[in-house]
Image 1 (cartoon, one colour):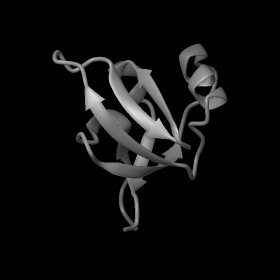
Image 2 (cartoon, rainbow, N blue to C red):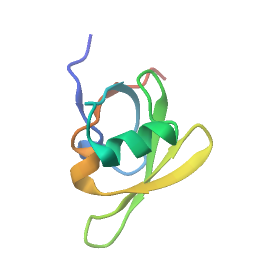
Image 3 (cartoon, one colour):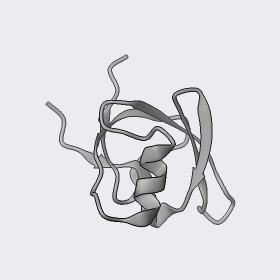
Image 4 (tube, rainbow, N blue to C red):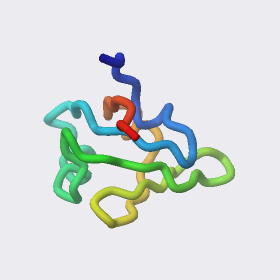
Length: 80
């Protein structure tokens, strides 16, 4: 089993499964409502030139988020 890392650490083009997200944070609650939930596959599509925001694809939708939000989302490598 792989040790979880964060979504913010995932490179462009990298895919992973969401392992966990903390509750009680307004920004993360909104991302959860948009489909970022544990067990879902996520892919980093691109990062802005200064590294923020990052764009991810989840459940067929593309979502932009701040790096500090992505740093709270734990992910594990997706199986090929």
